[in-house]
Image (cartoon, rainbow, N blue to C red; front, side, top):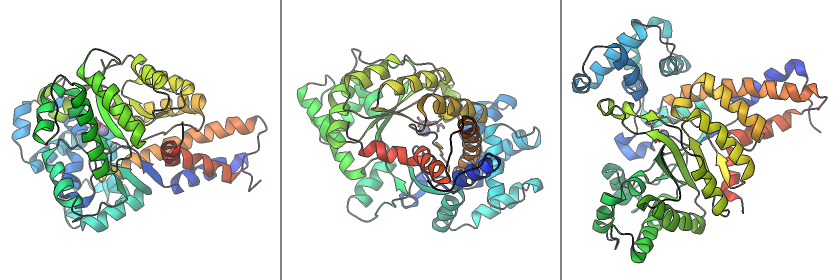
Length: 422
Ligand code: FIX
Ligand code: ZN
């Protein structure tokens, strides 16, 4: 039966296990350091995270275009002055910077902008990556890999394919397909340039050639999944190139290669274009599109996260109906303590242990430290409540069972889902 847990040390046991469990971070925008300056890291990158740009530009009078003309250091100083010194930095993105500094052993009370910059400037990147992974206690992170990004495509084709660099297994790939699926009317010409016999009309030959394009990049990247960010008004099926590409190319190749399809739905891209990456908004999607995919393609696997708070409840209910649907993460505008708490509780109550609770969405390496510090605390608190309710019924719980559950929730559910035969 294993060592039983008593109610009076439940919190300590759960917290120890949640802290000790290595995480698979299922969605990030990080890169293996061998990919060069695609990997963002360091104090100025931390402070100029697009979440903090949005928060700063709310309160300064500076015109947007003037902000973008500043140097990275000047941008960081403006954000630091505005959000951290002229206001208390308790927004989640501000707090995150300070948690990261604290976990790196720096004196947060000093408010020492120059001192923090100097600390990061003295780090040796490869050692520092290991240090960040150790602090955050990560098994691996999944990148976001876009074959349509010129700089990234060059690394894959000129360095990875010829074996000049061997990707670090701590950085797994995800084949990102926004450009293919959301802009086919222009993207088809790129594929043609690259030697794929496609036309904008997506005739039979084009369908086969897009499938070949997908399989070529799956061969190159060995992705954990194929992902796409889809707008809040995504519909499926519908009379559109995107719908045809998903049905005739993505889903058959996903089935053939056993690489799941990961629709991430709910963005309203660039509602304020002047804010660039910080200018995206959120919209509630019609969950019927996800339901149609799960119901009509029962052999396909779908990893799904949705951006609207209301959609996350609908997604959890849908996951109760379809074993080929694995919900993941508290994405973007949901990655805040109040909403992580609400969504995590709701998932425990509706899905038990059969979900992937969180991803970091880290764009900057150092963010792994705070995003996982904050989420682990919330997951631990929520689990203590759930186990306490369970023990209140007279159920006897062992430490081994808690460890088993936490390992599933923090990553094993992904790997099991990938292996599962539907
Ligand atoms: O589409 C995505 O992967 C989003 O996560 C990003 O576009 C977004 O800017 C982000 O980084 C949110 O955390
Ligand atoms: Zn993302």
